[in-house]
Image 1 (cartoon, one colour):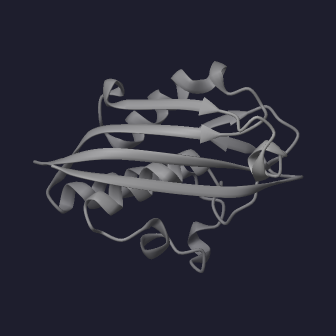
Image 2 (cartoon, rainbow, N blue to C red; image 1 turned 180 degrees about the horizontal axis):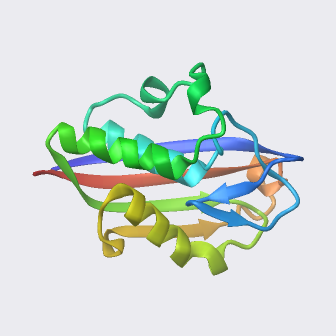
Image 3 (cartoon, rainbow, N blue to C red; image 1 turned 90 degrees about the vertical axis):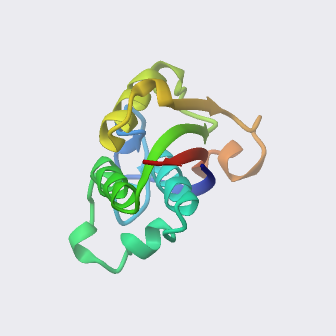
Length: 157
């Protein structure tokens, strides 16, 4: 068994959809990035790849790859799950925390869990998603961006 940790953060910007955990969330701004900039999914992928000692998402899905521009992070999760499986690992559990002052994310958490589990090919009971604010402190608290942390356990198949 191995443990992994992942982190991602993106700036909020006008003219983009806000996608977190594969859920499009109604909000006036979205996250800036090469893909759909889903920080929750990116943190989870980095945790999984790190646990398996396979590098990070930038190594496997670099922003220099134009074929990935605007790609759904759920597709990147599917590709990450395949990398793990090919390396002989399966997901034990995932625990992700999204840090955002706004919008309110609690109404979307269950759908995020389902989306991530489906994309990663594991039971939803193995995926936890939580959301918190930073009480108006830091870049997330000022509404400049959104961040996410994730930890996971992977096990040999």
